Length: 423
Image 1 (cartoon, rainbow, N blue to C red):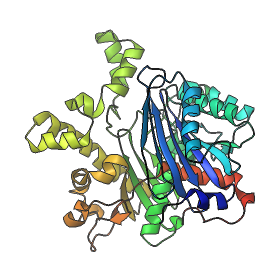
Image 2 (cartoon, rainbow, N blue to C red; image 1 turned 135 degrees about the vertical axis):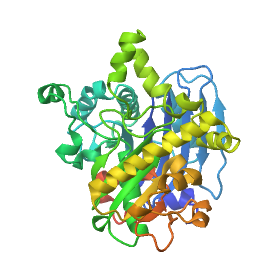
Image 3 (cartoon, rainbow, N blue to C red; image 1 turned 30 degrees about the vertical axis):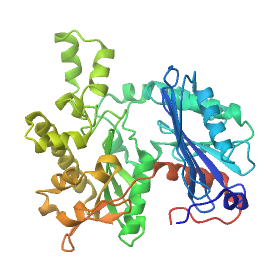
């Protein structure tokens, strides 16, 4: 794919989509041209509200990328988005351009109401706000990003794309916790799942890699980054996922515990005298790999394992053991598995994790070819031997492109012919 130029993009019409991912102290952004689904610019504003705020912007137009970095205080999200807009304008890609079709926002929690992307109006924003109690770490930051973008471009369609939406197809028996129904319903307690844009994108690309349609295949997707989740996808629909009411449940993660006995919370309250906030911080920020061995970077953990570090080795074994449990469980849920797919930072780059997660699962039809597994590539690829009954694959995720695709599909239907999404 050739690098687009500013002139090429100008000829494309109003096909640009700005994707915003607003965190509590950061804003990630990408500008894409949906006429050919190429990136025009990417950037990050971090440490918002601090004196040491940092903006990194990379234009991808004009035949070459010239990364620009700026440091200095950025007071709030409005200032952050305005700073990003200035960088885009310097490349001829300003937010005031008539070629900008929409802004797509990553919203972590959409509850049960939002099962697909939606154009944001005041009522939609109120509903996202009503979901803050079940997503207190994420939805407030997403809301701030939406309000800021709406203020800057009130005339432009703003679209919310929800992390939870892909998982709303789970059957009720998979989504319900076995607690009192009235209490659960009153407080919206159920399993929602997260990383949905990644699971949607990767499961679809895995079917393409196998030369089949999503409706024809059953796939287990392992999204392994600092946050990690698994999903069982049957015929293109999620039927089970590892994260629950919050992103804490499930796999061992960088700083999150994943599955623990709920009584651990009560025990720590009674015996250790810890408050709810202290336990929340323990399980979300001081557990997982960092709690087990002091590191949450899998590259560093593997280096320590290779040097004989016992704590790192145990952390790695616990991490892999949990993966195996979910692969086995989801194989049972699906009945027939066509592929197990690794994605995200660890899944895409750690050959030892992939090898260890599949080792010993030959009875399930799984195997990894050592040579194929060792290959580094940005392309979707099979790493299983030809004789394996179940394909094992690595599929790089692209959540920003998925958000842009879903955004443009909702607001860009009257823009004329474009390259088809998901091709």
